[in-house]
Image (tube, rainbow, N blue to C red):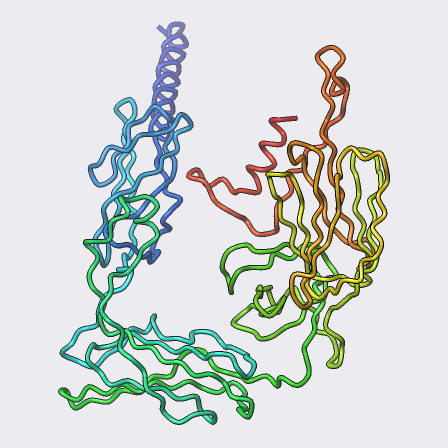
Length: 467
């Protein structure tokens, strides 16, 4: 009957609505199972002996994960880190996540390169990724130009720096097993399965006082007598010889410059803005900074403003230092008269801070010490060698509680934090105290976690949690 059609339409619509909702729920349920890989990146070329690590995240965290058939445990937040076998050449990680009957898969394609492998012996070839120098270098007379190449074993090799030398001999190194840091960190640290590498040739030349060169090419010649072949290779990096007669001085312009043990290597020193340094060469994007006859460090080229030729190298005679009382700290002020490079070392037993100034000469007749002192027991100096001055600040406190080393004008200042006096609750001085949390980070992204989280964001999140 006409009057009964409406309920039927409503029933049909309700059924369709339920079906749509079920379909939508099923789609959402399917979307909930997802596996991601943060490292290695798609298409990335990595170096590995026989295994490497892979990390990422799976949702939901209750899922099970296998990679290339190997079960991989998940952390409570669904992230994972695994160290899995690989094969040299094109390789794929096949990831499979399962949760509640739903499945998600992901294939990550990479290329695995052996840490080093010998070139074939039946034809004259070389490894295009193993030719050095591989960046431009600007060096002083007396510095070494080091040249190396990996090529067909059993060659006669030589090299020349255009306009500086003729062809000089290179030596083929004895076969050696290559070192891979990933195996040392994540594996069993046994390199016995790594192949012996043959055909690595090295040569070296010490620049002489009369040598001149500007972006001079470095040429390597390989001769394989039994094949009757000769091959000449142009190294990617060039050589420029700097004159040694006038020192080159630069001023650091970044708020904080991280100096490194070598170009792109580990952290060494931390210099505030305005420190002046004597520059003794450049390799790639780093300047070599001369600290003393036995010490050097490296700073980014982009952090340095070169000063006009004739600018004096950083130097100062230290005549006076004093210990001052400031709220929460005791301050040691050194009248350096210039922003010198410096290094601060903590000594635990007995507790002390040793500040080394480079470019400083002692005439320290006055050390003014405020009494009574809660923190500083004694201040003494030592001219360790020419232009190297050590100031030792011995502490009364049983432990280090932190310090802040910087320049105020041309004076060096180090604030040494006093040990907190903590009474029991409810009389604790922490009661009602406002604490400043500093989640600061350098502009670079830093490390990236298995879920793609960046180090700088983690710093901020942790600070917000603590807050």
